[in-house]
Amino acid sequence: VKEGKLPADYWSDPGRVSLLPVYVPDGVTLGDMRRLQQQAYRRFYFNPRYILCQLARIRGVGELREKARIAALLYKEACT
Image 1 (cartoon, rainbow, N blue to C red):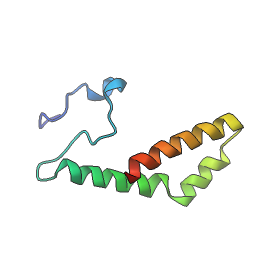
Image 2: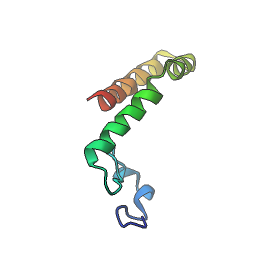
Image 3: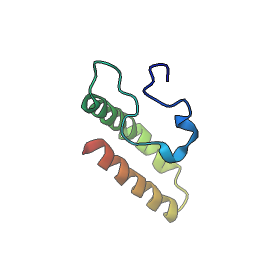
Image 4: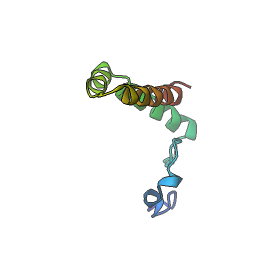
């Protein structure tokens, strides 16, 4: 916000949130930021411990379907 690269009210509008990196520091490219974001997604969401915890919390078939849908979206986002 101080650098003028992000509106002060950015996070107050959920419709504005993007999967692309919102902030790109000077000296870094959008491609670099995108690669770092994908690496972070893979490290966090595809960690076996995280996956097992999420599976243990499932309480029905509907929830299993929803988790599978989200996992597919995350995979697409993190690996493409």
